[in-house]
Length: 245
Image (cartoon, rainbow, N blue to C red; front, side):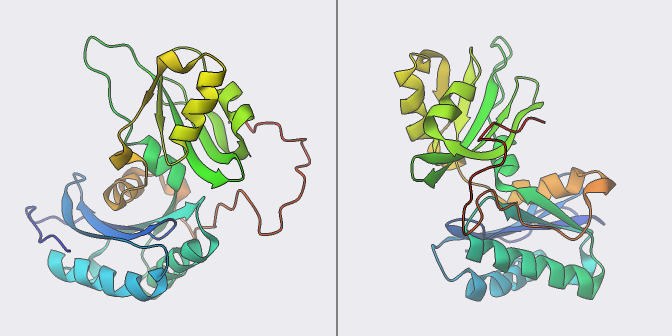
């Protein structure tokens, strides 16, 4: 269902959309990050048929056209190969046909930005984002309590992921959170881990748009997919070591 516009007139509008996982979702935000209109539908397949009509419906609800957009934000992965192709193809098409700058946003980044802020009297927590990659592996990203990237997006086994989680207070989010929490418990480190509410485990279109809104100019350009796991996986040249920022 599409929400109607509710923001005052603006001259900056950013479209964000995501087809990387088990949903097709679209949102438009204004200069302040306010949601102008959005739509969301859970689906495991059918993104190709759903995305363009959904974008059209959100633009109509916002009373905007593609020519009114300042930027487009789109998820680049990790996610399903088919879903990523749908979103990236649409973003490139709109960007080329209407000369709209495009910003690629990783699904891990889009979830990391929704980690809860601590209360005024509470200490900061590191952030761990883990998506279930199946086969006892996760797509992993870790940021320190100040939000600095510590472990860059990676696909690794659960045991290695658990060992990479820093000591101390940690917020854990993503579809792989339950499995990683169990792996952490086996290391007797789960007492400091807070699993974020499940409603925040997946990317949200409005945050994709907000990240595109504030992205520096050097992040603007034709987006490339973030395929952490190729279709025909090979042994990593670095022996599976974690990539660091």
